[in-house]
Length: 385
Image (cartoon, rainbow, N blue to C red):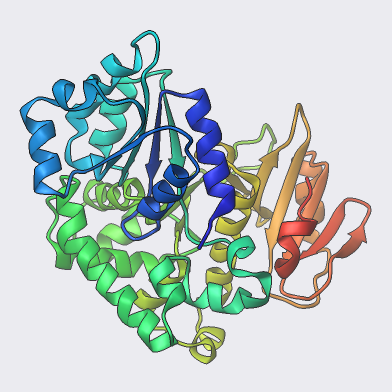
């Protein structure tokens, strides 16, 4: 699949930064994206794969010798295997004139982020690659994308059964192979149980005490498990927005599994009939569209927040747009959207310019002076903030 938007953005970032790191879980499409970027590059391209023994050996022996004479675009895949390469990249990136730009691919890990940030401050741009977007698969396939998630192998599978067979294999490989590669020493069965518990908690506010009691470990242990899965880009902790209002506000993050295919595989949901009738259907829909909107608007982690008060008023997403203009986005699995008391309360409490209500119906239209209904299938064209 061409993924034109991502190719265009990564090429722009490579013109601005000496090093661009494309981060995301295995099989999300990082290597394919790099191949597409390389195909559009006018100069020489060099590729090194750190899972290939020959490439790994060259970089282990003398990385400056291996990389120093290369010109053009240098792609280094599976860079999480050698985070100690980042100081070398800093030396090469600072040469004048600049001889090469580096596109590095890997899973996000604490070591990767820490070491690259320390060594390459001001020289590196992080680009998180998510699953296939509605603009890539077509809005007419919205339900299939919701059910199967955005991993290309799951999306392209010939049947739902084949898609979920792949997703189950991905979960097992991720826990047994990828997490240990990132330095995680938690046994795979324990992390699988925790991940499954998170799936049943999807869309709710984090409660470490409840998780610790259910899991039979300490609060700090479950918090560490949560941070590990968040760092590996398979879980999102959506942080609360702390507005300057008098009401008592929720201060814990909301938890979402980033990919709905993985969510449904962990929940044992493998077709649309089972999904529509499942207790987590509404939360799954919310998480699916939340990821779609964050990707559509290009929001960084620190730009995406929810807001909730202990009185019950809440909004799924708060987005700042230039100066003091703030927009609230509410997501509902309904074909008959309406303005609620909670929306009116949030409009006043947060002094929002507008609330956008994303719904499951076919049309977009205005509901009130400052409330607009946008159809999920029309997000690409109608979500204008």
